[in-house]
Length: 525
Image (cartoon, rainbow, N blue to C red; front, side, top):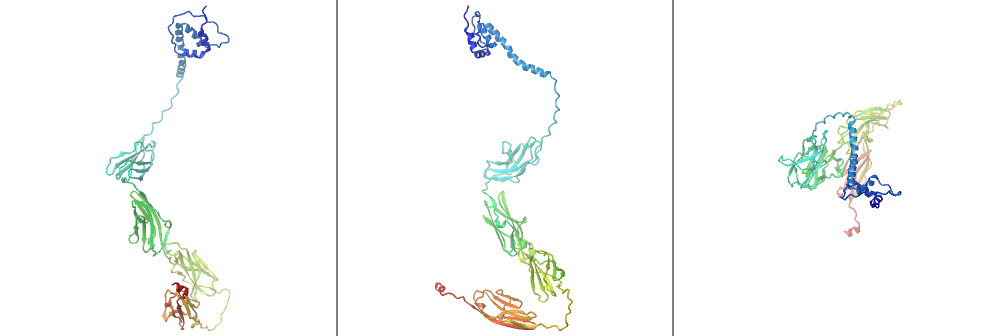
């Protein structure tokens, strides 16, 4: 009998390698047919071989049988593809589902409206940066981007400068020639086509701006600037810009009157000058500095004020007890500024002297109290603003008499005493000596009825309204103040009082001395 074949044992030990060999296409070398050996049963502890591995020894023993087995192994590969084919056939056999209705046709494609707000953002010697806003109407087709086109001034040869659509609303047109004037326009593009273009109103000069203009308004001019009528207005507003900016001024949106306002501009600032201001000069002044296509503005508010007019009317509303009620209306002329208050004064009919009752009073009515029984009063009111008190006042046409109430008194009949008398000095003037530069006063007192008129004289010459002298006479006390006298102010001063019943004078001597200089100071000199 033939011996046991070794290949069978090797296949049992390495089943994986055998399986790989089976998977490969069978290439069988031509050998001479031999008689198949009889295989012995495998040991019990040996692992069972798979079916395809067990067929390998037979193929190895006979090439014809190997070819037959390879041919028989082909159908399983087709069987693997047969399962999906059966699934497709089963699906085809199922009934078809109803189709959904077709959607309506899409709306017609339309371009957008033109972009808006196109202007120059910046420029230099070789480029111009522009900025714009998206179209107001975009539509259903949306917005794909923008095309920027340029052409030289005085031509219509428009050319696109961007190869791809610009997505943002800002673009820098580069590689331009210095000194050229470009016309620029922007077109929006979408599926509907090109929109109408938006173009700059005028051609842009390709040239660098070294420094944009900037007006620098001083801090005190950022608020309302208030001046009085007749004041000199001289306001300086600095600015920057290169080359030298072109400066222009307007008042309330109108050009300035060269007869009233003078403007002087240098390379650094501009001066607004008014020689003598009037109320008509009040308003909002705006300065504009411009360098080519760039500009900056600064505005200031000028208010020219003066004293207000008197209240429009004043009347006595009621009188009771020791009180009088007054009413008045605001003045027609407030001096171009708000009224801050009123000053109310009263005067007794007997003396005629005015006394202030209320100051800085804000209402248009007042009650005057603590009046004297039996007296008759008149009242007047002044207006006040930030300039001061009005020069004129409103005076009541009627008089208010404080009556005696609750007392029935019958005065005895007797001849009225005559109180009239000629003026008489009750205190005389005294000689005085003063030093140069030190103000001094001359005092005396006088009585008389009617109230005498007081006049001061120097060396028998009436002083009058000389501002160097201040004359006061209150309740019979008369004073003359000589302000900062000099040697020339020395002499004889006379006070003269007179009324219908007579005239009286009194004199004194004033000596004005030079200041004493110490000996130490003399030596220094």
